[in-house]
Image (cartoon, rainbow, N blue to C red; front, side, top):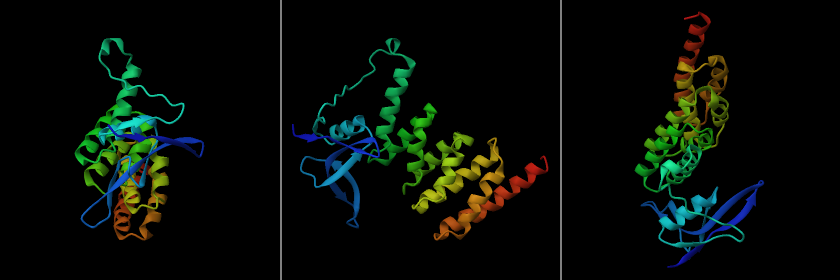
Length: 226
């Protein structure tokens, strides 16, 4: 079996794992996704070694680990002998890996499963996924972020300035929903959302206009004690 070398480099004091990859094009001749391949001329990056190994194996190849790196493929064969934390860690890594699957149905299911763990480490994943073009992936990511309530408000406000208009639009939707039932003052959210009324993207403008009206109404009702 051919092998794909997994390499490692340090970026901003964090380890990044990468492999050679082939670019698969869509009907418009644009890159649809990358798959690990020993003859690839592109680079596919991963935030951890497990994700890199899983991607290489899914592509049908064996792998060569970076120097001085070790990897143990963990399988839960007896849950009665495995601690709750161990199980959650295994599930988290499996769900996280599958959240990047090229099959959107698998990715959606993985994100739903990941949201069930209610793990704060998953917030970054959901923030990234709410900028996806795929409607279902985006919706699941937004719903997951809403479930974190006030915990993610600051992160979502930051996302209002993201370069990706889909991310900005999704952040507005999530913030508006959080306003409805989270223990947070609507005023904190209103001003950042209002700034998006003049967004360069008309879809974001429209969402911001509607959201600003809804959030303002919540502000008035809150001040009136209703």
